[in-house]
Length: 307
Image (cartoon, rainbow, N blue to C red; front, side, top):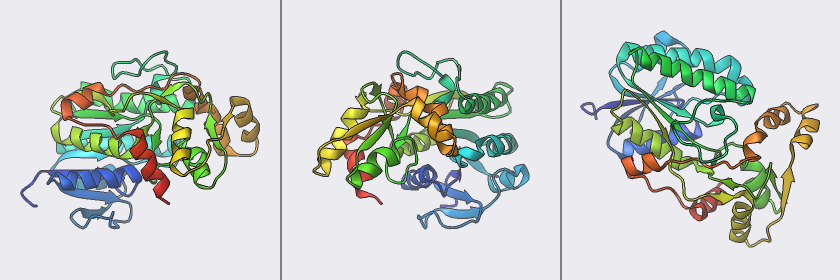
């Protein structure tokens, strides 16, 4: 595959990164999978490479010749504020040095409190410290694009679910149902939500990296029509032959738990998005790249079958 366009996936050992590698390889691309230790990411057709993604010199070296750098690195949430800034700067440096398009796998926390569907043209109005960070990171990339230093595509997903995905609904909903326990939903379980199937996220990242030609554009992952937390839990319970049992986790409960559990404090700062409609509009990406989102029934079936 030496004559084919080279796509570099940074954070290729993560759940999303592995899937992006798979989709790029399946499309016939030459793929370099960057991890800290250079281990295989499960597809022998991808070239594993070891590099510290926060080291701009090392990252520029392993991305030389690439047409796209797919930024799928995801530090643990407790290290976002320490790890993401140098990682962002290194990726900008690599994109500027190599001319490769940067495809940034992002979330929606920077939008803050919204009343309707989240569209790619929404302003950044974060209401949590993590949202402020995500807005700042995005703006770092966007300023570099505006200055002409990089070409940039941002791909945003909602709350992730799917095999291996870690999110505010992964363990409390699907893990609980697999164990025959009551599913717990952060916030209000009857509000509209479009959870993002992780493979749809990866498919969109890969498609954008292959086909986007804009100097700077934001894309949202395509989703099926909105569901609710209660409907999602009922669907999952029916698939395992159980009666759905739902309990809401409130902001007050998380704050109380946060006195002893740091992750509960993190969740308390993010629960606002589950106290409002959480609908991500990915119509533009669906129409432009021909992406049909995975039905919730299929996505739920896959996550319940995984371990």
